[in-house]
Length: 438
Image 1 (spheres, rainbow, N blue to C red):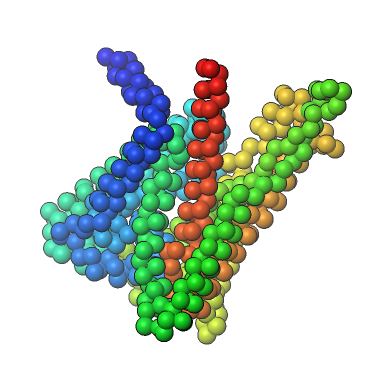
Image 2 (tube, helix red, strand yellow):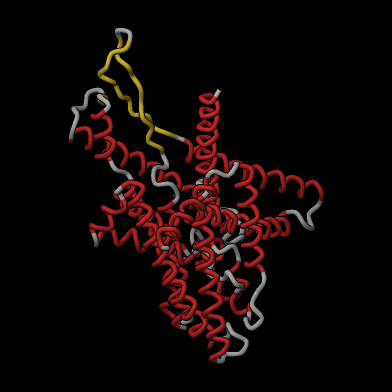
């Protein structure tokens, strides 16, 4: 009986995977609409004004962005994908403590799937813990309109189930093999916060201005936004090609090729991890009720992006240096667990290829590691400086933290480009399969 259920499950996954691309796109769109619908309506026994006040703290703007405003609304999907992001950080850190986890992560597709299932289990556990902590800790301070055992239990169950449902939804999107399900939901959340920023920019720079000034400001804002997107695209699309020479001769000449190492080798993970780490002490201070304490309030300002690069308070700009150090640290860390120079060197050796001037074996491994590290650090430095420049510009004009700027736009552009590459490769494979049938 169990074998029959397993067979049906595998058949279902196969059918989902083999759906036409247009059908998959329609399913993704429908899922996003349903998720956003469930994220927009607050629970009847929740005081949304209290949560708006909490999330109004500059350091928690990133949390509000990745949840797509659902935490501000305290809806069914209040936690959104934040437990999964936290679980991913924990699991990546645990690979250092437990070598078996690192081996599992690098053990091909089967190992990665098992590692992902463990991450999902950790995320589900964190969802329950986080939901209970919010209902009990913040509920007593004004989050719940009526702080009773019934409302605490209801809120805990609803928020836990909502987060676990989103984990299941992301897994379902993964089965279609059109990209990472969590990344798709994250992009939808980020995009949902953009209209609020557009209205804020309109109110500050366009509304109430004389027509000429309003038009000029609108053009400048649009040009700046497009320029930022252009820089993000360049960062996500730039590669360094390492030349490779195949020892097999073709037509009397050596076969020369190259394999690319992307400038953005670690994708957006260092940026997400660093932003999450910075917001963690602020969240803990809110749950512990010590946010108004003198020392805690200073720490919160130090970690808040809205306090950086202010000429009258330069001390808090040191938080930007901490942010840069964290992204660099996570770049090293993620490169170590996500980029395997041994595997690349072994594949080159098996195919009879070598890097000119570099001997096969360990010299090739060390060369690839050195080059990839230098490229990844260059990409991280450029990405982090772009984010800090956007924060500086926003603070200079008194805009605070905009979701449309900073970390959010980097994540969005990077994910869209990765999605485009995947869809292009899928289309190429289908075209090739169609030609073979002919």
